[in-house]
Image (cartoon, rainbow, N blue to C red; front, side, top):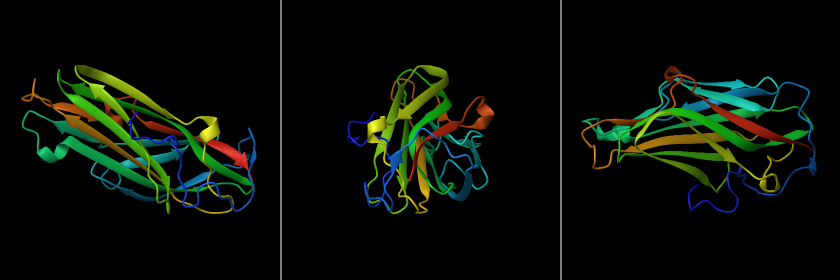
Length: 212
């Protein structure tokens, strides 16, 4: 993880951190009613319009993100602008009355082709609309790497920050991939991808629930 990551790691950050409209009590329950997701916007060089899909997990524990055109490349004559790609998904989570949520963890799966000397980076931000703070989590990779990769961002239970009860706050998840071809094999193309066409590749975001 990045050394710049504060002690409040991988938290959903709210504009009024720690201040809730209604007191919140811990609960191991998940809502009985199905949550629904409204994708408000999808923006970024890694997700052209119509190339990202969000689906709710059937047990209400979170949602799945699938990308169809998320690929960063460098080296071998690839255009310089291809070394970094990002995708920001803005989602409104409709939750049943009496509950609130936080992002507890997120699992990422992708594919990499990093020549010896090349490096890759996966970075993700999680935050609510209106937040003035913006922490991120980094995962670094070093070549040679040819095949699948997976990472997990996890928040300790004691550090979870929940959305304010009774308020609708859009959730932003901004993920980026970067590739540096290095100098050892700069004439060869290295890449990092999260494209569904590359196989068993997706992102699963897990919620933690509390009753209000």
